[in-house]
Length: 78
Picture 1: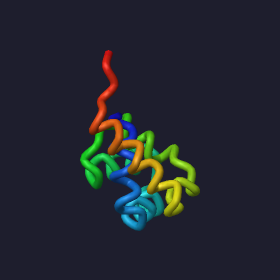
Picture 2: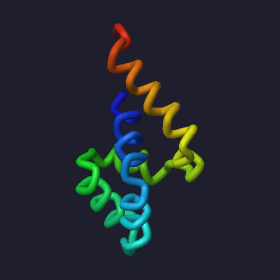
Picture 3: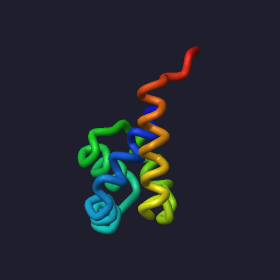
């Protein structure tokens, strides 16, 4: 669920995410800037960096948000 939350946060701020990625000189600086921007862990920032651009399409983003909402309402039992 953490990764879906991180991805949803990135989808809420697509322009900011792309700006961060374009403005940083190396991957570590980009990861750190994404952690600060989105308030996520290094693992979360890596997940954002690994996102395919098609995830930012409206239909894909809505599907991810629906999946996250469902998991929040009905957390998996371990």
